[in-house]
Amino acid sequence: MGVSGGIAAYKAAEIVSRLTRLGADVHVIMTAAATRLVGPMTFQGVSGNPVATDLFAEPRRWNIEHIALADRAQLVLVAPATANVMGKLAAGIADDFLTTTILATEAPVILAPAMHDRMWRNPIVQANAERLRRAGFAIIEPEYGRLASGALGQGRLPDPESVVEVVVQAMFRPKDLAGVPVLVTAGPTRERIDPVRYLSNFSSGKMGYSLAAAAAERGARVTLVSGPVDLPSPPGVEVVRVDSAVEMAEEVWRRAAAAQVVVMAAAVADYRAAEAATAKLKRGSGDLVIRLVPNPDIIGELGRTKGKRLLVGFAAETDDLVINARAKLAAKNLDLVCANWVDRAGQGFGTDTNALTLIDRSGGVLEVPLQDKRAVAHAVWDRVRGLLGAGETEVLVPPAPDPCLPSGDGQC
Ligand code: CTP
Image (cartoon, rainbow, N blue to C red; front, side):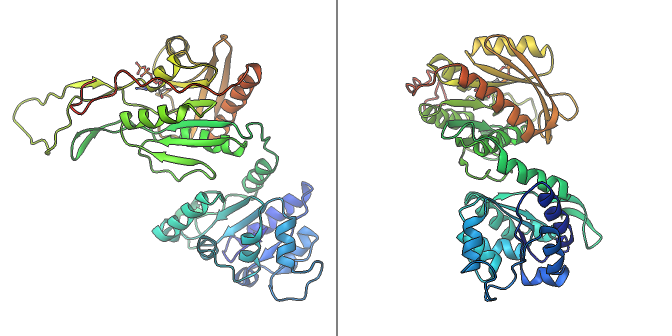
């Protein structure tokens, strides 16, 4: 466990204490700045192990101590992770015990940033965080709340219990999707009307991103085809960014052949403008009529050419949830449909939580109660895992091209 020099370093002692009580063998590495805030003896006391602070100190247990720690670690947690430590890691700088150990380890690394909210929002810090995510580091998002400065903002280290929960999940999450190629879609699509306007919907992409992150945690090889959203790439996931439904269809159909499971969580726009204007539409005195033509039904086409691939769809409904979801499952030849109410508090578009009704081909219905979208995502993968185990799996033929891909003039 790395402790860097943020005010939240005092919370790190509680994290070490909880992990130790759970039976973990915790070795703490402190940066020089952290030692100014909390004494190394505190961490030695709660972990029962010597605390590493100085790269050039006499080795106490192993030769080249940072390499020995890097080799032995099953997981590295840095809490709090300062902007400085994140910047150094993102740049590959190793100038102290902590950064050297992290660059030398093959264990999963979880960073729990904590800093002033303006620092966290700084584009350079955000770019570093994104770079680290892409390199496979997991980042526990700082919480919103009262900061050390007294101001309110996003920058707090989550409470020790939540941090420990993330560590435990990362260490003991079953790798029951190891090597399974998975394709997930997320977010809305944007359908251009003219160079400055588009039709879209309120999807935030959070459910699809949680599904992709959860599958990667379980060992799947995940590709995420994402509509335009403001979310960081989940660690270990290949993200393909698209804008319109037609672009999403092309990317999904091209990649679906290699996937064993396809989960369409995207809120795909069903229609697009027959012809997007090339010049900005001007305000006129009368009504404006825009003719809309249907977009390709991405999942419907996958259902038609399905083979043994497992196809999971979403059904966002405002009434008759189960009846409508069952009809979608049958009409689109799905194996599982995840139905949710889009007009209930805490569920659906834009929220951090969700509740789903999972309906499978054989009629089985499972209620997933309202909870964090990541936990909901794992409940979906539990069900998918069950369905994969029940059937055979094989490599599939690519789907036929959709008869309704637009030609250059916007017609099908
Ligand atoms: N979907 C798709 N292509 C579309 C529209 C939807 O692949 N053009 C997928 C969604 O990703 C979702 C499922 O189809 O997995 C159902 O989406 P939804 O919008 O609820 O259903 P529709 O079939 O569009 O039906 P309706 O909007 O009439 O309820």
